[in-house]
Image (cartoon, rainbow, N blue to C red; front, side, top):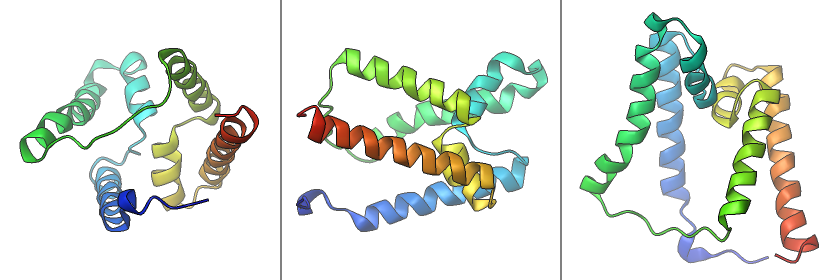
Length: 144
């Protein structure tokens, strides 16, 4: 195994993690709600109309973040080495896993773990184990 030192960015990653943690903490302190994206998005379909405004505002903030970024800096270069079929199947599997786990990685991994939730610990360990297994299968068994 080798490390791609040109793309090794510990300080930027640390700063991003701190910002995510602060945002999640502010959200729970100010709103009393967990900042889990799947719950916020899914809640748009099954909540009373008076509970929709903050959900729409939260999701709009996620969407508006990209144009704001583009005003401040150029888009970082990225590459996805998978076809559309693989991406669709992966997205469906993530959605199914989110329903079974009762939340997504942001809800369990960031917010749940910070609240010392045992359920979130089990869910996060399951997410991570599934990710490790998928990478191993794709890279070492399927020849990818």
